[in-house]
Amino acid sequence: MTQAISRPAPTMAEKIEAIDALCARARIMPVITIAREEDILPLADALDAGGLQVLEITLRSPHGLTAIRRLREERPHLCVGAGTVLDRHMLEAVEEAGAQFIVSPGSTDELLRAALQSPVPMLPGVASASEIMVGYALGYRRFKLFPAEVCGGTAALKALGGPFGDIRFCPTGGVGPANLQRYMALPNVMCVGGSWMLDSSKGWDAVRQASADALALLG
Ligand code: 3PG
Image (cartoon, rainbow, N blue to C red; front, side, top):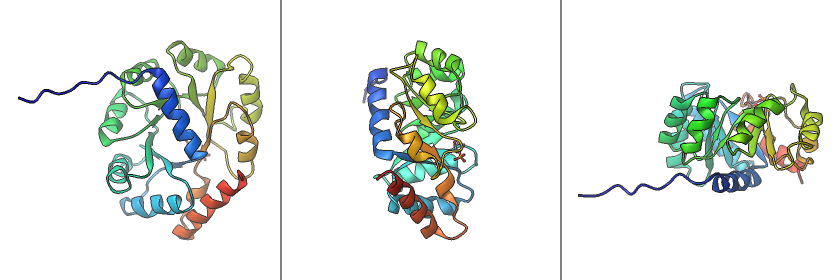
């Protein structure tokens, strides 16, 4: 009889280390909603060719879980995470699909606690000091700031750096070529996310070019 080897969930310190590593690799994280199943591979390949290899696939379309599964199987060199994870059932589904990290637009007690037990690191969404404090009390130190431009942008991040000196953020929502350098210049920003590079109406090469252009802004 084979016995399942159960591994303890990684500690929060290990998860923070994993998040820091993937954000350092990403610098810019595309937030992707797959409209058509046939787009999964060409879109990922265009982003990869443009230098973006850490992808957040949202569950906003029915193809999200399929995309995570297929990219893990067919593009194992990419780092594939799940976005728009809203509750513990979605968290379990994306774990099962093989997500390497999890992002949520906001924070609920249920989701924050479920993710503590998960082997997969999560970046919970926050938009205020109070939400940061709820996550902080559970051990979280890395957050998505969403919607970043609406909740104060770089000025909010500078202000939050006062009381929360050990917290780092991935701002998303309204981030793009016009402001990403200002975000990335802040010491409490580890990477930025957004969807501006995903417009494929001019073909996949336009996605590759927009990705490369965005990275070039960061030198
Ligand atoms: C999101 O999670 O919706 C992302 O922040 C995308 O935002 P954007 O479309 O403004 O880039």
